[in-house]
Amino acid sequence: MAKHLIFLGAPGVGKGTQAQRLAQLMDLPHVSTGDMLRASIQSGREIGLRAAAVMESGALVGDEIIIGIVGERLSLPDAAAGVVFDGFPRTIHQAHALDTLLAAHGDEIGAVLHLDLDDEGIVERLSGRRVCSKCGAIYHIRYHAPAAYGVCDLCGGALLQRDDDQPAIIRKRLAVYQAETAPLIAYYHERPTYRLVSGEGEADEVFSRIVKAVGAAG
Image 1 (spheres, rainbow, N blue to C red):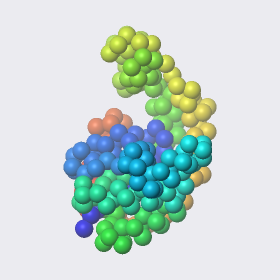
Image 2 (cartoon, rainbow, N blue to C red):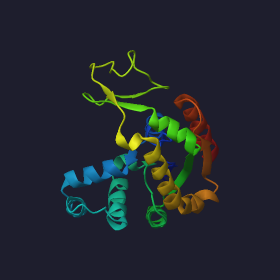
Image 3 (tube, rainbow, N blue to C red):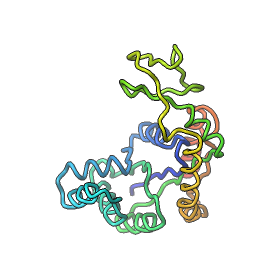
Image 4 (spheres, rainbow, N blue to C red):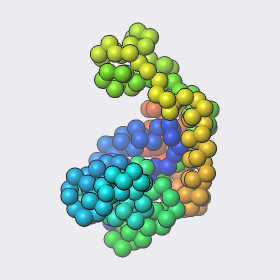
C-alpha cells in the first residue's frame, strides 16, 4: 500500500524546499503540479496534449485535466511506495478526487503537513529575496546574503528584487491564498494524519519538525 504525503502552506512558507528534502530523505518522488504538467505534455499522451492546448490558449488548466495527470503520475513504478505532493491538491474538488483515486488503488494519505507561518514572517522572507539578473541564483538579505551587497557570488551579476516580492503584492497574494485554501485546510484538519508544523526559524529547524511530524503520523 502506497502512503502519499501532502504539503499545505502559503506562498513563501518554504513548502517546495521542504517537500524536496523530505522526498530525498524518504526516497520518494517529489511531485509538483508544474513538473507533472510538463512531463505529461512532453510524453505526447492524450491528456498532456489537452493540457498543452489549454495552456496555449492562455487559460488555466482545469481540475479534470490536473486530476487525470495525477492519476497518470501515480501509475508509474516509482510511485509504488508513495510520493510527496507539492502544490496538489489546491482545491476541495481536487482533494475529493485524490481520495477517490487513492481508494481505487488501495492507497492512502500518510500525512498532511501544514506548514504555518504568520503573514509578517512570510512578507519578511519573500521581500528579502534577491535574484541574480544573469544566472538566476537566489539569495536572501538575511538568511543567505551574498559576500558583496547586491552582487552575485557565482557570476558577479546584479541582484534584483522581483516585482511579486514587493511587500504590498505579497500581502495581496496571501489574502487570495487564505480565501482559496481555508476550505482545503478545513477538509484535512480533522483527519488523524493532519499535522500543523511551525514554519518559523531556519530551514533545518523546520525540517526537523517535519520529520518528527511524519514519524508521528506514520
